[in-house]
Length: 266
Length: 178
Image (cartoon, rainbow over all chains, first blue to last red; front, side):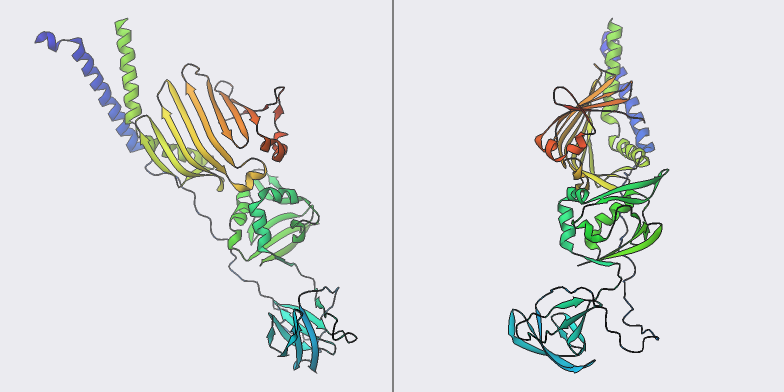
């Protein structure tokens, strides 16, 4: 019996048990001292601006301009499918006879203030009609020489505007083909120590979808949706939330002047 | 000699006990806190531990709050004399796909007491295959890549930053400071 108790095997077993107990104590102390919860990424706040852009220029009358100003006409362009067939009245009283090209025999009579294919008839001119859509004015004229066959054209009133309409399909194209972004535009950060002071446009490929945004080589993008860009994270926040945004406004520095560009996403 | 044998046995047993009983998930949370200071965050992951290791599944890796990659699984196996880190199915954020293919199938990194000053590994993905070697003495990472056709054709710009070897492989060296 004593031999059994004094056996080296028992001693070894005791030592191993002691080591196990020490290991367990160490593990217990570690479980108390170590953190119980992990780290999670904090979700970003929405970048949808807290305001909506409203164009007041058509609502506020300029007291110096008492007579009605004919909208500026710049180069015309063949637009959609409307044909102006007749006018009756002038200014804000009267009506027009209009049809779609595809079914020119089906005419409609539209009074001032009524809508036709998404365009609101605003006023009647001596040789055409002024329509309004999304705060933009358009003139549809009758070609008096070829009233039956000539396609009337719509002229877009071009005033100095920093608003660019962007098709959502273009955004989707870039999301599906991100390598195309870097083929169409080059952007480098402007570092100031550990922070970034903005992003400089190094090139814009002519004729590309990026070219339509109005950015030029040398422009420095400093803000987006009222948020200053001081890191790649700030820029990526916009990219990641772009599907939820209807408007993006960016502030750029061009020739030491700040300029705001607004993009409305259709 | 017998005493030495006993001592080694006791140390081995003690080490195995520590590895099995140690709260590995909590140790992982401590690592996350350290990585957060370096602006690296693993989020939305499921962490589970087993006797000789740890498994992390379905995690999102972000750097400076920008989502960089989605990782399907990370397995850490600790045996003391031989330790292994295996990462499966890494999908890199699409915005970076202009420079590097989006999918990495497997990353396998191993450390053995047989070669205590070196950590080695390999990576397989759409880009091809890469061999990694990290010297613990010099803190130098050496990457040697056998690139795929896709990498050669679509990502030639990225390859220009690497050195082309005589056997057609591309290599890259970087000293990493902790």
